[in-house]
Image (cartoon, rainbow, N blue to C red; front, side, top):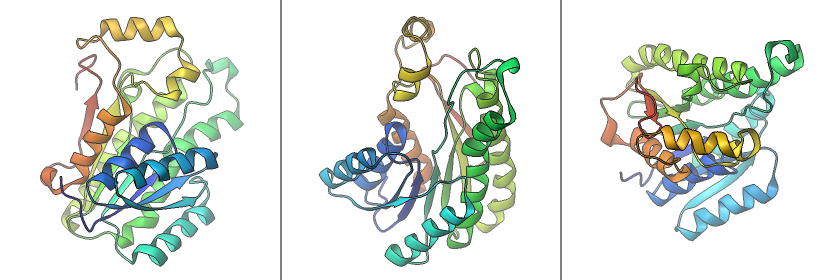
Length: 250
């Protein structure tokens, strides 16, 4: 998966899967735009990890739910790496809290849907003019988008289901221009996401129910993203690719 000479933009690149994706793409030779939002410490850790593998990257702050910030990220990308983007990975997202339907209010609805789905729509829209034949977009859906998710994650699951459907739609729209777009659907991955929102016993139960009897790693997800971003997957588009250790099948 030689990505030498390619420019990649990764939203939510500060930690966990986003960081692993940034490091993997940089290791394969891509110049990486690392989008971060809430932590300069996480940003620095990602940049140091990229440096350790000999990669080249810039870090750009942006709240990817805000058009002004997205536009600034596009401008910074063009300023440093030029007018062509080869790879876009929309990782930014979150669960924020587990809430039943009775507990959901309009502010929480907007938060979840905006961070997960709106960001994917408008970041893709903003970077699309810089992408041409051979470019690849990788979105982040989820196993939750297939099965409805765990207790209190209905809005999160719905937002990820929207990403899955939108990915298929854009594959038809972008395909004639030679631009591919796929989504990955992670299951139980050992990240801060589950440290914060999933009970230890639930994680153990899920791992034991998985044919491979374990959680996945951020690096394993990043490997899949790199494949979908590379020319090695040149006839794949419109796919939602499961990575869950066999727990659920398409």
